[in-house]
Image (cartoon, rainbow, N blue to C red; front, side, top):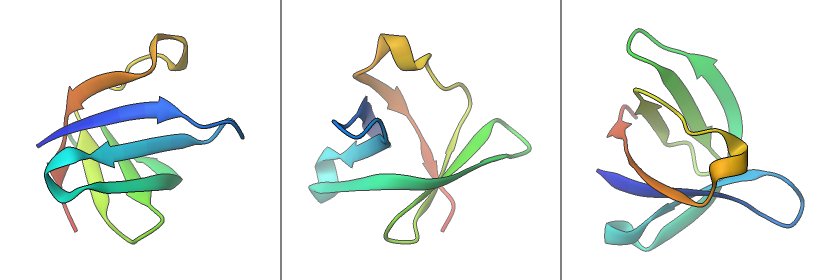
Length: 67
């Protein structure tokens, strides 16, 4: 699924999923088999093959929902 990554005013990474009209803060980052796994405040886990540098945000990237 396509998601947009951005930094909020507090400096926290935020994920926006347009198809679900969902915007949540990232509460945890871990390493997965195929890249980084971000855990959102609502409990979703999204896997990213590559995360863009924070200086290059906002950016739309491809993610895979794990949970």
